[in-house]
Amino acid sequence: MQRYFLNENAENHQRFFITNKDDIHHMSKVMRYTEGDHIIINFNNRQTFEAEIIQIENNSIEIETMEQLEIATEMPVSITVASGLIKSDKYEWLIQKATEMGAHNFIAIQMDRSVVKLNDQKASKKLDRWQKIIKEAAEQSYRQLIPNIKYYSNLKYVYDMISEYDYILMAYEEQAKNGESSQFKKILTQLKPNDKVLLLFGPEGGFSEEEVALFESNAHIVGLGPRILRAETAPLYALSAISYEIELMR
Ligand code: SAM
Image 1 (cartoon, rainbow, N blue to C red):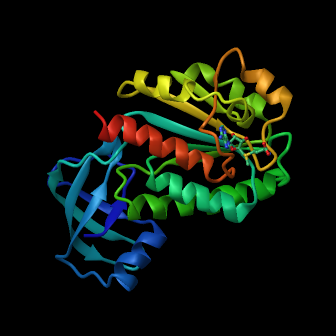
Image 2: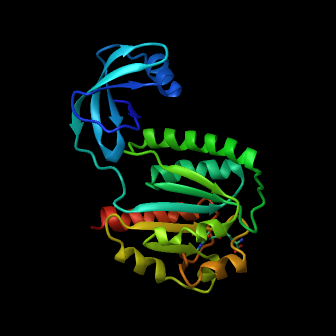
């Protein structure tokens, strides 16, 4: 059964209207649903319902919730992946895969060594495109929420938000080169359900010394093993390790 998202709170036998154009197109033209067909809708607060299609119009599809489903596909901790801007095809690949792997939020940041430069107009166009990629990946991977994505033109803006997180990890390649291999593992064993974790990754050129200095007294500066991973690979390594530790090992 196909899954969709509605930014509403739901109870059983409640009616709603789906008005998102992409969803309407997918349901009526791609899936060719008719009245009476059933779909799955993810509502707010990770509430997931089986729903029946009541009426299909051009600009809206009326549905009724039939049964709340006991589903838990979300990672028990909330992971924010904050990455230096990298080449767009690689970043789009990263946010798609990281959505499948359970990231809850993304922050794209213009870092000192980012080759890619975005002005405000380009950034808002990119954010729309990125959010669409994330929504599709969330539907495909049975997520119960759609991760969100923000863009900041400087790492200092992210630094100003650090009090919102329980753990801040900066994945620093130089730590790896110096053989640091215990910090990441140690923090993973401390993670508790509902912890908010900020993971920081540099662009292709890595972090500048100033960027590392900005975070070094407030973040765990960690190595992710002995190999130097691409900017689009490193977040996936971290997400799979966190998932293994708190979803499979416990
Ligand atoms: N230009 C850097 C160099 O040659 O050393 C490599 C940067 S790497 C392509 C991009 C980002 O991935 C890094 O800034 C870091 O955040 C992360 N990363 C890659 N491999 C890592 C590792 N083994 N340990 C920690 N972070 C790593």
